[in-house]
Amino acid sequence: MSRPEQTYRGSCHCGAVQFEIRSDFPELTMCDCSLCRKKNALMVKVHESQFRLLAGADSLSEYQFHTHTARHFFCKVCGIYPFHRKRVTPDNFGINVCCLDDFDPSGIPLRQAIGAAMP
Image 1 (cartoon, rainbow, N blue to C red):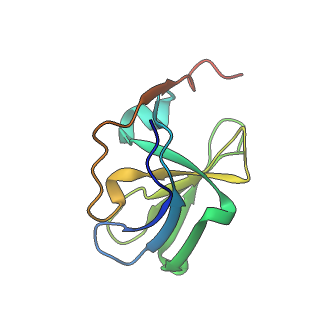
Image 2: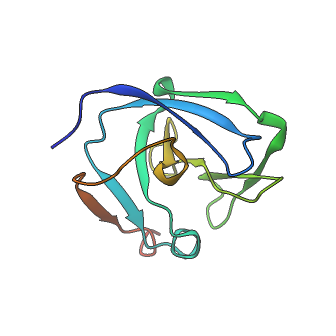
């Protein structure tokens, strides 16, 4: 069951990267690709129109691998992964919900995304 749509703010650990999203959290995902397994992020998918970078564009570092389609962003200062541009739906972001302020993921359905088997 999703929640009422509302705006949430988030940041990396040091606060250099700050953003906000609008979502009703229909589900959260964990991906089993080699990168996501290592960063162990819990993500929600939001359309780019529901995402706004508030601060820290210059503090972001980008990492791409395999097909070089998905764009994974990390804070250059503290190393935290706040979000990425998705591979299959590049007009959407995968947001690390652990970076959202005062967010409790309890009760939101969790889906295991199959990234390791993608061609």
